[in-house]
Image (cartoon, rainbow, N blue to C red; front, side, top):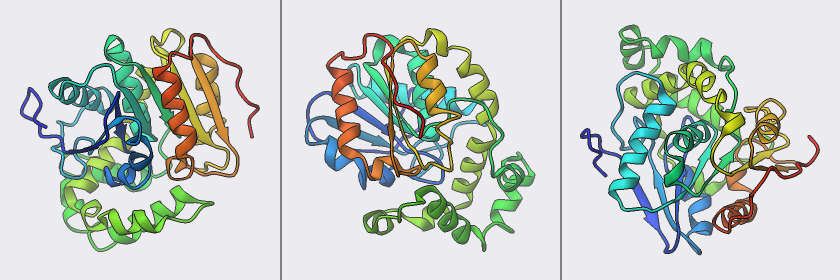
Length: 284
């Protein structure tokens, strides 16, 4: 889908009904969603999974505040596709983009499903690795030279970390093109996203107390990538209309292991169930 500023955003779609937009996280592409949530959600909804800007087959945005810029681009594509009041489902970094989308265009959405997302500013754990690649000039050289031979190992290591304590599903291993994740432009886009989390989230978290949309917050109790005690739990307490689902025994990649719970969360948003902050389960 071409946006108004000439950006091409790649997507796949399936199903019929109310629109649901899926946004993948870091070190990934839309196949992370087509191999997990899309088959389940497309039974009841019109589901659209995007490659976020700079990932997969989507064009990259200029180097700037990534959450807001990506939200603007995806909104432009959604509007041009004629999708009315979708639910945005964002995982990890895609969750921050989803929250920025809701802040910028609240009247055009039904709600947000925030999956294992980054809600509050913190220095990325891999900043020692991603920082140099995000630099405007040095980074271009690094991703074309020194990073190339080790990138497949880095990607596979990160995927294992994301999925722990679960195993990476066979379907994802079959569908996710590791070679595309190792392209220089993909490495640089991922590094830029990682390093721009702090300024983006500093701005975003200032709006949580008056956030205009209902948000379903879903996290795994065993998430060691985005600690639910530092993100999902306090976010659910700060938002005016939120519901927290803390899923026992699951790690960061909740969308591969809790499709029914996520489908129920989407249904509740379309049904208008979140009229006020709901009681949240205890932290686990």
